[in-house]
Each structure stands twice: as C-alpha cells, then as structure tokens.
Image (cartoon, rainbow, N blue to C red):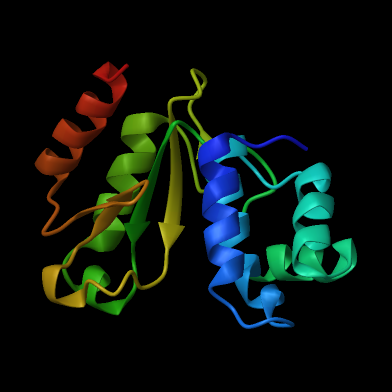
Length: 160
C-alpha cells in the first residue's frame, strides 16, 4: 500500500519514538493517521500497518473493532459528532442531536447523499464545562445552540 510522503514521514517519526520492541505502541496513532489519508480502515491498510508494527492482521483488526474512532467505512468529508452524555444532555444535547438528524436527513453513522457530511452521536468529548459540545473532524465547538448548529452545517455545505 502506498501512502503520501508526509504520512510515511509521520510513521517513521512515530515508530522511532518508541523503544525497540515497542513499535506496537504506535498502532492506534498510525491507524488514525492512515484513516485520515485513506478515508477508512481497509483490509489492505490493516495488513500494511500490522507488518510495520509487528502484529498480525487479526490483532490489528481486534483494535479496529474496539475503538469507535476507527472506521471500516468512509465518513463524510466533514464528520460531525454531537455529544449526548450527561453534561451535554443536561444542556439539551439530545435535542441538538435530534435537530441535526432532522436538518441533515440522516441518522447515526450515516453520510449525506453528496458525501459531504456524516453524523455521529458520541459519548463524552471531555468538554463538559462547555456543553453541549460538537466536534467537526478535529475542531471543537462549544455551547452549541440549534442556531449555531444550523450556521455550522450551512458553512460545511458551502465549503469546497
């Protein structure tokens, strides 16, 4: 499998940051970086990463199936995650979630027909003091209201 030179460099740096024999510690970050570049975790990607960290594809697949942030199917260009855990729930995170589903016409872990936006209901984002919280790719939004969410979704639809 071929990755971009930037990702290859990132892998090299990451693998060197662990002591010899501990390369498997780089597994989750490598999967996340590769997922960002490739779009999802494929069987080919699993085999490639397994070889680099000294694990079997089966062992890597176990990790992929455990972590919810690792995905076997592609997401939208903009992945919107809405927290509905206790702090967000107490600040209408559940209503925000319902609003997003209605606005986008999709449900949990689904992608809009144009492939631009995917939606996911998540447990704690670690932003309880700023609830309700929304994350788009790696960008956090705090104190999100339905109006702010509408603006955010509209801006994502207009982005190139």
